[in-house]
Length: 455
Image (cartoon, rainbow, N blue to C red; front, side):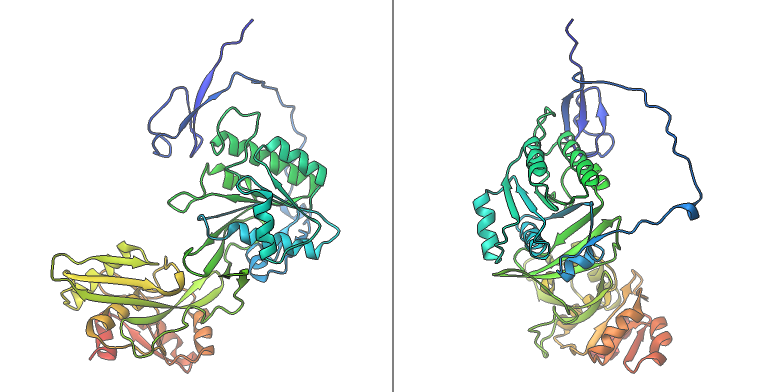
């Protein structure tokens, strides 16, 4: 008796199920994301037995010690929670060409040196063994216990994992790996879910630590279903401008560590190198007497970084002004320009305005508002701002200067580097002035900045 074929449609983004094909997913609102899946094959349902597990008071639960695998790449270990947790499954994402494969190949090389009795396996579905070996030689990695495999079939990869029995595994990438048991193309919801589930079970059962490389979408999110990020133990992003030498490793999720840490790397000809003291790393090469620039202090994880914001205001005689940003959201710039037009009465509507954050850093928080305004005013008035001044404050639509979080932590770094003045909110200046020798200029409204800098 032939079993009638039964199909259902799954959204590749969120996993929403439908009996028929839909153009627009009602769950995630994305278009053309439904794929047909045959659910008639191997469909078995079993009645599970009642579990004997019992709830217990929290103070009776025994604390298990997490064994950490240190790579001695300090920036990487810090982000992962002072090392990789043994038996964990971790996911790293980032834009193409940002250096994900290079970073993990360096991690493999370090682990191969530190644990010569163990085997390391690097699996790539995108590059041949020869290409990986050439990159490894460029990075001065030539350990005998580092194994390379070019394969996309999960069944073949699993057989090689059992044969090699690696201590650490890299899978590059999850979107190119295909399970032969699933009748759908690579990168689809069912493929990613199946391969990740199989790998997760294997790592937990055999105490093998694994890193998965994931592609990202044009929005910067890891491609594929969100279930991928829920299944793994840690999710980290490798960020930066591929045309700039600086890279940030940032933890988004970590079951075994703190998500409030970032690692800073610099891309060089010989590979990625750590930036161990990043405080002034983004201020190199600044011109002291140039106008249109100011300095702010941003927090990346638990670190204070000093970042230079640059602005250029140019008169446009041919129509409405253009707004161009690098490292800053264009909507944020439009709002700050509107605030200046309102409270400084500046004719900026017909000016071309360009804002750049030096070093490839992306400003997503609001403590840099005051610095961007200072740079815009400096460029408009053609008046330089001292490189010994720091600007820290959020600016509201009514022009008020608001407080910033963790000011004391920033102040310690500011004192170390001998800055002279800090422009911030009135409340913070009055609260911390007695605790520091640095002159804190408290501003209640942005119009007060004119008398200090641009008169």
